[in-house]
Image (cartoon, rainbow, N blue to C red; front, side, top):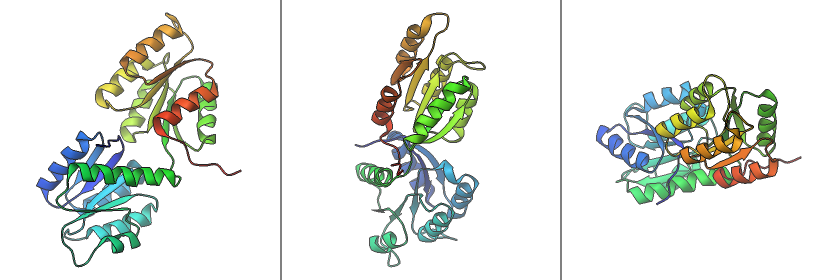
Length: 259
């Protein structure tokens, strides 16, 4: 069954369905924000339009149907992928849903394997069409930070950066990234502590650790980072192509640059 770590806003006016589907999605690794009102879902999205990677909404709801909600969301952020869930409806079918910009269509009841497959089809399809993956870079060395940012942005990735682990964790909690690249030796909160806290709260987070030294040398720190869950580790100075190869393996390619 395909899994993921993206952020999903799930909307259904039936509390039991919300709880059931939330459990399904979280078991697949996704970060879920549940809402039992289409109006509340719209408010949550308006408050943070970039805080979600996917919307899954019921069709038949009071005050605002799923189709009406989808149209409002797409006016705010035209690239947001939306999946519509519905039982029998004379007002909506898959062709009508596609015509208004909805990317996926699921008939109720929601089956775990089926929704898992549709979610990945929609998200991976968006990525292939050029939706950028997001990288969080944490490093207190401004020159290294700038180099990593420029390298990542040149490849088409969206970049958020922080100069210490404490700030990096805050940014990730507010808006989870597809990948974290973190230094080890930093003020406020070092990279080892940062990795430990992130992996404890977000077990599926993908992390690349880098280090230029310290009391026990870069290899010692990077070995610790690897044991704590870092997927790749690199000593400074980081070789650009080696780093990008690791990034592409973990989150795929960035948006194509046309120069």
